Amino acid sequence: MSSPTGTFPPLPPSPPDPPRPRHNPWLPEPRPVGPGPVSASATLLVGERDWLGERLLEQRVVALAGELDAESVNRTVAALALLDAEGDDPVRLRLSGVSADLDTALPIVDAIDLMGVPVHATCVGTLTGAAIAILAVADHRTAGGHAILQLVEPRTPSGIPGRELEARAAEHAARLRALQERLAEACGRPVEQVASDMRSGRLLSAAEARDYGLVDDAEPTRRPDPGPVPTS
Image (cartoon, rainbow, N blue to C red):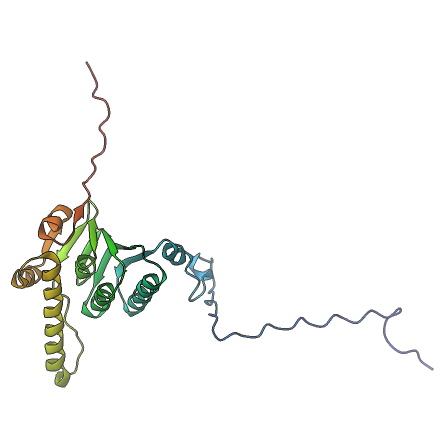
């Protein structure tokens, strides 16, 4: 009678495979990593936790930079509403090189107008297009010493079928006029002057923006200290 095949003494049974974590549809999937060296951005997750934004919100600060899109507008409006509901201290709005069209600027302007707490806005870099209104309607407005504000008409929508072009052009003109009227109110100037300056693309330094009425304070430009003068 042959002996059963196997090892002696018998090996203990293998431990069961650990249970696979259940997929949570609300958590983002990692970005696929392609061949070659792994860059820093390749390890990020889509929708990764914005720790910097959270820290800023803890300090009642909302920061905007670059060209605004629908996502950044939605986040900004939500952040302003949250800070308005959570306390009575002023909200600080930081604008760094921001550009916007009518669709992205006007919702933030409306959100600032609806705030029950003061909004203190500070501009650095170049502020252009309809984004100027975001600064102008704040309760207190400051421009950095090297800030540039460009009064320019937001671009008209493109790629619209001919049958819709006339209606969209009329809508754009009405919204542009509303923006110009809000800017004129904020800076205390005639609306026709604001409209003319936007058509010409007028550029304003920080000091000129203060004189125009778009900001309350313009930080002076600091010159480097030349050091002690050598003596002969």
